[in-house]
Image (cartoon, rainbow, N blue to C red; front, top):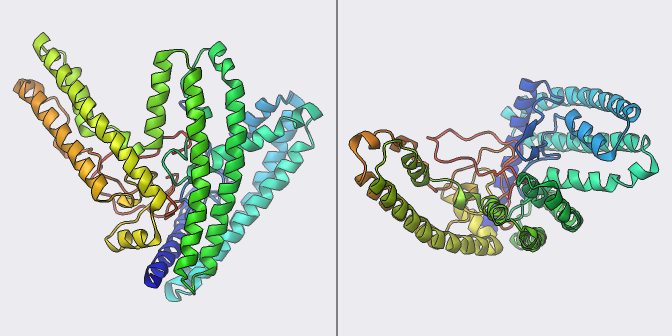
Length: 469
């Protein structure tokens, strides 16, 4: 077990060191500052993940070469606070000064990090100094944000100041929900409801529930994020000792905090469902929750894309249409039952995974970026049961596709997706960035880690862009 502990610690440290290198390269390419700030996407703005998106307890270097709030985000907050034109102009002037000052901090840090990177090539012990320098920059980033927001608050009226805690909750939810490690933990139900595009009167009836959700979720996010930060610090402190029992305790504490966040989401999913009177909207919400909670289970497979392509063929006969519908219905019914079993299996795996499990996976070539429940971390959460269920589902899907192809003409079959883009449900190693965390207390890489060597594309990215489950 001591060997296992040391192995996990080394793996965690390596991910941080590699993350620092990748961040340096990213900054050199972008020039630091606000490059790459996210724009608007369906369902509202998808902001940059402040302080690091993903990586669970132990990963996520964060986009430390950018200010933690973009100018577009600040404009959005100004509108939410109801600032008048004079106030908004003042806030934007404060933002320009904040960005300029942090850009200068980044420029100085880049030079020091580049020096440490060069030294680390010949002296591996310098990796620790590089890691510490990255942490120093992250601390400076946090301090700069705090000073900026303190300045912003001086421009507010008393009525506007009363709205500020809501802005802080919003930033915490959008900026850290993606650090979640368990299926369903990375849900942002406010965003999922917004994505439904409900009529104003229906959306208004849910405002009280969503406001209370934001408060309850924020309380658990504060606790969880503190547990994750403490875990990162503890791992650094234990690098020389490798105490397996201490490591397991850290994992268990992080897992308990993660479960509290996940349980808040579960509770409010039920409440929101009960308030959706429109059955079509309720079905869309339920489907979105499933995809966001278990992205590796519910992402589209080659079989479903093939069937979708078949249904769009313009020259299908009535008999073909009827047969295809029957085959698809039977396949969805049978694979749906398997998906439910996979949900149960992955949830159980997340709640019980140990350092020994992690060591075993790394030893067999596992690892990689974060991934959320169900096949993330290069299959970290897979075991004999999940592998068996996945293979059972693949067999059912292949059989359905073969049956459909058998009733098509050669000309019709030629129009279907080729087998070279075999987008089945096998896990994919995430490529860092905004990926979600490892599961069930396992933590893992993520954040600004370098992308692994590219393989043939197997499936859409796991990240559901809803705060990432």
